[in-house]
Image 1 (tube, rainbow, N blue to C red):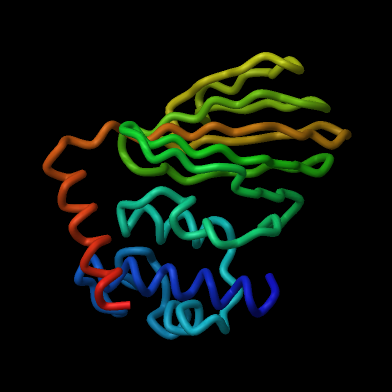
Image 2: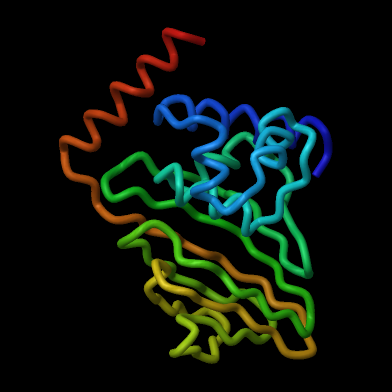
Length: 191
């Protein structure tokens, strides 16, 4: 990731951490990171992996898209590139991503926020995907939906695969939604 992208990501993480009232030490501990690494990420100096960003999103109890919303170019590592296409504002929250996987790639994903599902539509190539204990061969143009709050996997053969990923988060109760809106308003005032 280039410097402006890292800086934007770092600011987003720091803003959300502070809105949750978490110290740098606590978030680092909860996400399984060294405090110095999280500090570098927040300062735009680190080079976090996609898994690190996902772990931070889970610990902050926010959709992955909230951390990468201002990142315009694809994020990637180890043969996988992901780009946020759009974020919904409804309840439940729905985010849409474009994903590309290189040949012979196995991407293991840690569980997302409780109640999260993924619906994957294969655009090109061949892909095996789903919950680790229930992988499915996807057909071009057909969608497959699975629980994403458990470990899951994407696996290609000897060709590239391109897909759309629709992530649907659990519906929030009205109290949690109101608290989130109030926190957003407080952060806007402070900015």
